[in-house]
Length: 75
Image (cartoon, rainbow, N blue to C red; front, side, top):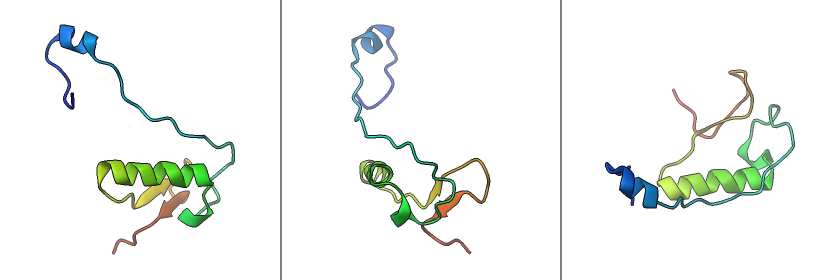
């Protein structure tokens, strides 16, 4: 199903559908270009774009506002 079921009985019968990805251990906070991300991180972002059908324009790589990859420039 694509929507949350109204019935708890229906919810109980649901099985999750998910995809697993390889992770990464590197600190990404210094990265400012998509091309410089680890291959597994790029694969993850590409999957999100394809699955949702929308581009990922901004990727946070740390806690600071400056720790961000901007793939589209906003005016």
